[in-house]
Image (cartoon, rainbow, N blue to C red; front, side):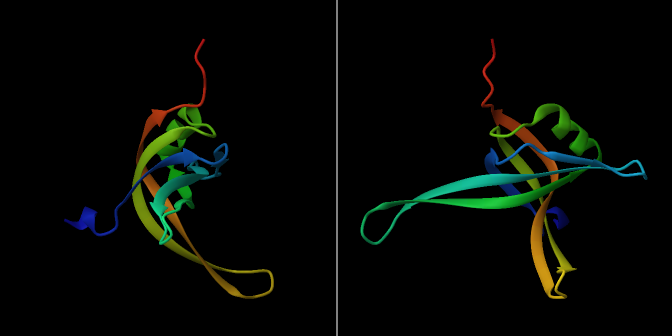
Length: 115
């Protein structure tokens, strides 16, 4: 039951080419953004398209898989957990952000054409 407490599943497209960082400790990190889209009718009957952007981090072997398989525009389904972070801006203000720490993903579609 513990896995149900902080579990996120999304389907969306990569907004940019993933970034990769290899640390001296041997750990690797992949970072990218994922766009999810919703469509609904407003009170006037007009269709509204809403895009949400999500910051995604993946570590270790999952980061290595991302480096081999994913690129901008590809559609994936992902599973992960929410992680809240805080930091201090250059002006000394405390800022907060939420990322999704990826645990697994599935490639659904690609913008690449195969010849």
